[in-house]
Length: 379
Image (cartoon, rainbow, N blue to C red):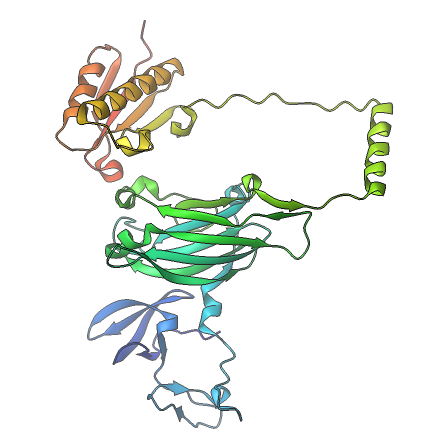
């Protein structure tokens, strides 16, 4: 695998010119200084300006790009490029404790290059394989005309690994949040074969401008926006291994032995999942997004009055649940618009003497959210 260090002179593969490496951001990304400007550049898009072998000889290809003695053309005319640039796009996952508890499956991850500000700028786009299967994928994104899908990438990702699909600017988010990815999960030996998965990528770009959407996932050392693609535990099974008669007899005998020994299996009661659980940040706080696309599957056939009623009904339902659960705080994300929803929410909140509300953190939510503090002295 070819690596670069600060001070290396490099040339661009897809355009004229080059520069000097001023910073190594990651194994796949460096800053290249060109005419006084530092440009984030993928290592697969650059080569060393020249490379000398041990004898001090320099080899130059026909296009002017340098290569080492190890890359001299072989007898059949092909370059011996033993270290493929694609190798550095795949890395093993180093899971934290939180990552080890993460649901096994496949994720699409957007990691801000600038971890200080998070919002805006460039993003690493990863395909994360947090499973025991080898992953085969095919990625399609909507083309520039928005009239059809264009094949963007395909390949494989090893188990417990992540693969860098691309580094994109924020102006490319609209394209990378609309597409389709096809997944096939493979194992050399398995009791069951999983069905292929097709996932429609459809992410609201507004999410990328809310700092709270980027969080610690346990799959990266950096904060990231994680989108679940495939969950192994719920994936449909294409076929299962059918036990032989001898295996079924052995299982029946084992069950009889267990009954004979009066083995008691403790069954834990599962608590029903409340509609409100997904809004809980912790045991004292909750966050509710009241945008209509978060509350309904489709907006077709709904006029403005219908949508407002749906939003207000859900607001009241969540507010009452927060009071019932004795929470300290709940944040309602209502957006800006013409201010109708915000005005109605404030009218409702004014009916409660023990509720105090004010604009929520602008850095985290923008200007379209209201934070409600719930007092303890209430009747």
